[in-house]
Amino acid sequence: MMTISDYEITVLLLSLKVASISSIIAFFPSLLIAYFLARKNFFGKSFVDGLIHLPLVLPPVVIGFFLLIIFGKNGLVGDIFFSTFNIRISFTWIAAVIASAVMGFPLFVRSIRQSISEIDPKLIEAAQTLGANKLKIFKKIIFPLSKKGIITGFILSFSRSLGEFGATITFAGNIFGETQTLPLAIYSSLQDPDSNLIVIRLVGISIFISLAALMISNRLSK
Amino acid sequence: MIIHNPLNSIIFKNYLRIIFGFFILFSQALKANENIYIGYASSLHNAMKEIVNDYEKQSDVKLKFGMGASGNIAQQIMRDAPYDIFISANKKWINYLDKHQKIKERQPWISNSLSVIGSLKSIENLTLNANERFCLADPKNAPLGLYSLEAINTLNLKIPDNQIIFLKDAASVQYYLSINECDYAITYSSNILNLEKNIDIQSLPLNLYSDITYEIGILKLNKDTKDFVNYLQQPSVLGILKNHGFIIDR
Image 1: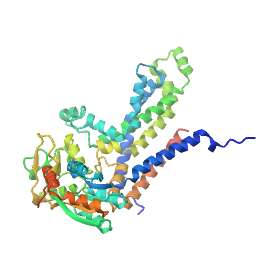
Image 2 (image 1 turned 180 degrees about the vertical axis):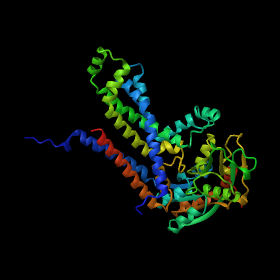
Image 3 (image 1 turned 90 degrees about the horizontal axis):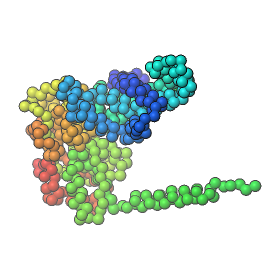
Image 4 (image 1 turned 135 degrees about the horizontal axis):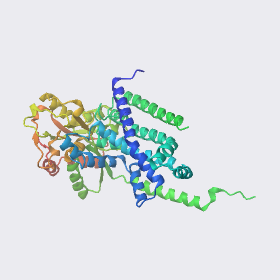
């Protein structure tokens, strides 16, 4: 009863794999965009800002639908991958990673942007007068001072991925061992009148993982 | 000293009025009791739209419907979803509700057959490339999935687990077929009529899987539900179903 079954381990490991890889993938573009949004003014900034926040407000199923249009076997990008490299994206674990990364992206951008805009501009001006170039300013000032936001963003996007359902089931399907993450496994078990116990156990695991992620993030961002 | 009571403020009173207004509005909408709620197997969807449309022209009764995998609807009913009539794509889910005393009356209805989609020369020698996917309905809830697995087992097809995409019901198999996501799929013959012409479709022999029987279960017996169920057995309705590719006499 208290031991964890092979089924649960498979689901759990896949969820952690998808969540960590998607957060890492989302990190670099998030950092770049957060930097531009926090420090620069450019034409169409509010449009870009809105676009980035779309995954936060759109129904996740809609995001899944867009991803299918783009990365599906006959999709705009998916077709190129499929016909030239013979690589399939939709309905593989890579699709689950992409779905999670897109859903976690706005959360990542928000928290990094917040901490970059809190950096005192005088520090950057001082560095400029001392002859530091942009890259050096980014490496020596902006990056270290926005660490808190980066960690928070990481945990937020990681947790978002652990809870991602709508985009994943639309774009990556519900394939055991391949794309069936925790929420999908819970959904599957809910469909089966005989698996109430499995549901309760999976829900328990899900609560445990999410709480742990939040507690770690609180500890790290202090 | 004057104590200002927030409950007397104009804003608060208007707020209460608005809430009250909404309450009246929605309770009126909920009260209309000439509705019949029908839950049905998703494979019936296109035909049911037509049938319901016709029925509402000749009757005052409004039909509201929910569709999905038969098992899914059966479980919604177990959790007290307010369906009056339930049409399942197999006997299993009607039996399940019957066992829990939810069904007042039941009767068999129409039948269907299976087709396999994908570029196969012969079904027996099917081999999937690593990047190909076989779409099936989820046998947990969708009767289509159970019938498909029967056919796959009888044919002794070997499909690697991680290349099967289980979709929640017959309608979503149809959707993913329509956007070309599935290299192969098994679906109802009634669901392939509006697929593109350049897709290879073969019907599966009927002896590969058990009889597909749709059953109607009445959950609330009254005149309205009986009338509608009688209507469903009329030749005109069966004609519509036949046009959609269902088998009406077996």
